[in-house]
Image 1 (tube, rainbow, N blue to C red):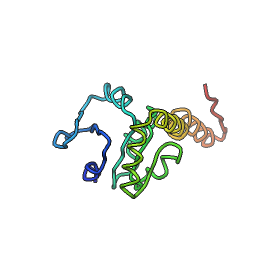
Image 2: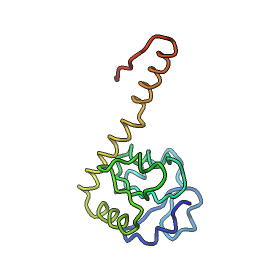
Image 3: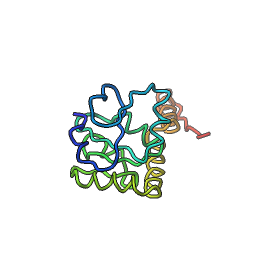
Length: 150
């Protein structure tokens, strides 16, 4: 389910974050939430090998941090990650090559990471949420309200 069986194919160095990851043959980190984002931000890219999940919060968090995404083209990741924010494929060699490219080229990772952050902020950020919420409340009350970004 989590795609850990795919990790052995990757040639780039991997760090694994999450609960119950110590059995994997990679550096594993089960960090408190307060430390997690800073630790993720020190990485070059985010690998999302999940096969069966809805839209994982970890994917959105990585994009918000500004990490380019390398993801199995399954689940809602296909809709969440625009082309300029990462690489999605059902073909493992494509994902392996993409992760290696991001790890080996900081400028490329930064370019894709900036696009990932912009996409996450526009789709999942608080400004969009408030605008949608204000519009719904205003429409329900018969008084359409337009949210003004601050």
